[in-house]
Length: 249
Length: 313
Image (cartoon, rainbow over all chains, first blue to last red):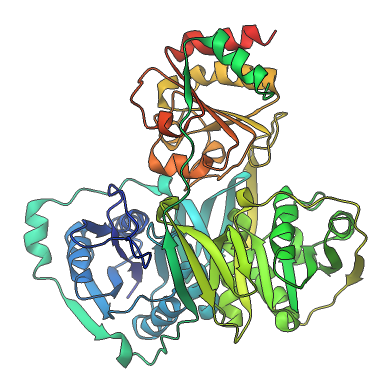
C-alpha cells in the first residue's frame, strides 16, 4: 500500500505568549492551550492532498509524547488521516531519538513518503526530518513550498536563503514543510465525530527498542533581554535629524 | 583542547559571510583549534578566502564533481568521513546549515544544538526557544562529538589577514545519487544581501501591493540598504520569500532596521531583535512594533517614506 507517514507534535499553541517560570526551569505550561505544531498541520494537509489526488492510499499520523498528545492525533484524524500511532512517553524526546523512533515505525509501515513540519515552534530545533533521512539513508527535501510526485520520483521546490531551489529526489524520501506549501483545512464537526471511530494505536516508547539517551541537559531557562524603551518623533524631518545626530545616517 | 570543524557555506566562487560568523563562534569555544571544510567541485577560490579568516588554522578542500551544489545528502557523508578527529562540528544557521547539520549529526550519532547564540564553555551553550521568547542554557555531555548550528546574527564576522594551511583531502565516502539539483531561482539584485546588510528597509502588509513596495526599494537605494518584508507581506505576494525577515525567515542584525507598515508579530520581532537601531513607521500607534523600536513615527507611510528619501538629498 502506498502510505504516507506524518509527524504531528503537540506544542504550545502559536497564539500563546509563553512565560518563563520564575525558578528558571522552563516555560509555564499549566493551563496553556496546546495544538498541533502549525508546520506539522501543513505537513498533514500536504499528505491528505497527495492522497486525494490519487498519489497515496493511506495517511498515518504519528505523535511521540505524553498521554495528552492523543488530542492532537484525534485532530489529525478529524482533518482526514486514516489512522494514528501514538508513541507514549512522559519525558521530553531529543530529535535524534524521535528520528530513531520513526525509523522503527518505517520498518513496519514501509511508507514511500514521510513528512514533517520544518521545525516545531516550541524548541525550534529543525532537526528530526533531516536526522530521519540520514538514518534511513534516503533523500531529504527540507523547507518545501511545492511537492510534485511523478512515478518513483518527486520534484520539490524549497525555500532557501537565495530564493527557490528545485530538487529531484527518488522515493521513498523525507520532506519537511515550509509555510507556503499549502493552507491547512479547517476541521468540521462531523469529521470530529467520525475521527473518534478511527484507529489510534498506542505504543510505549520503552517497548520500541530505542534507547532514549539524553545527551542534552537544560541548565537554565531565562526570558530574553528587553530592549530599552524608544522615543517617538513627530515627522520625517525630526526622524532624519535624530538619526543623523546619532550618527546612524 | 577543542578541535572545531566549521563547514563553509559558499556558492562555488565566494564564501558566504555566514562562514566568518560561524568561525567567530568556533573561536569562542575555549582552547579551540579551528578547521574549515570546503566542499565544492573546485574549492580553490573559496579555500583561499577561508584560509584568510582570522582564527582559522587549517582549511580542508573536499573536491568532488557531486559537490557542485550544496546537497545535504551528498555533503554529509563526506564530512562524517573526516569528523572523527574533531570535538565540535559547526555550520551556520542558514537554510544551508539547517538542512545539512542534522544530517551530519544523525550519521555521527550525535545530538545537535540549533541556533547557538553564545558559548559558555566547550560543552555549554545558549540558544533561543519559543521563537526567542525564552533563552535556554544547555549542557551537552561530552562523550561524543557536538554538532551545532550558529545563529549568525549573534556573532560578528571574524576579520581577515589570517594564513591557514590549505590541504586537499580525499575522502572515502559513499556519495548517493538519489538527490539531484535541478535549479535555483535567485533574484538578481544590485542591493546588498539581506542577511549581511548594514542597513535594512522592511515593509509589511500596509504597503498594500507589490507596487506599493516600490517606494521602499527607492528609499533603500538611497540608503544603500537591503529590502526585507514581513511574513504577512510575503504571504500576500507583495514580496518574494527570500525577503522574509523573522523567526521562519531570515534572522538579521543590521545597524539600522526600518520597519515600515509592519505591525510587529512576535515571530517578526524575533528576527530583528539584534538590530542596533530599530525605526518603526506605522499608522497604528498601538502596534507592537513600537514596543521594540528605538525611534517611532506614527503616520501615513506613503507620505512619510518619500519625504525621508527627499530629506536624504
